[in-house]
Image (cartoon, rainbow, N blue to C red):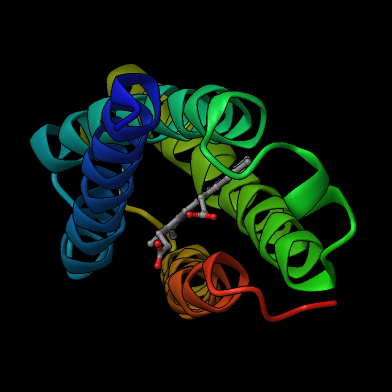
Length: 151
Ligand code: HEM
């Protein structure tokens, strides 16, 4: 029995499910007129996205080095690197919504009549949809790598 591995696995799973919830929340909220209160909520949710993603990186790296299998198990496994690449792509995709949420909030604070331009809203929605799709690939890679696929 290895308590460190267990704790890291539990925290990793809880963080990953939280991130799924956050992506879902952003997906549901980014639609319609987007009043200032919703824009504020979106910015707050998006901040948590960043915090949780950072924690996933820390805990994930913790699993690589302090998990039961040892780091050698992962560094030579291409499925592990596919999982890392997918996570990195998700991170890159998420920058567009983040920048928009901040900008929309700033404009809404400056001018109460501000309306999110429809084209920007559609673009952000597309990025969130792409993020959600990539996110789905990650547990698939994770399950495969954990079972020794990828050598
Ligand atoms: C830098 C980011 C990440 C790193 C370094 C990382 C690393 C790891 C490691 C080392 C394991 C243990 C696999 C084993 O038991 O051999 C694991 C498991 C897992 N990871 Fe990650 N991970 C990261 C991000 C993510 C993300 C974003 C997700 C979800 C979208 C995710 C989902 C999972 C799942 C579901 C498992 C359990 C696999 C299983 O036991 O079947 N990971 N991860």
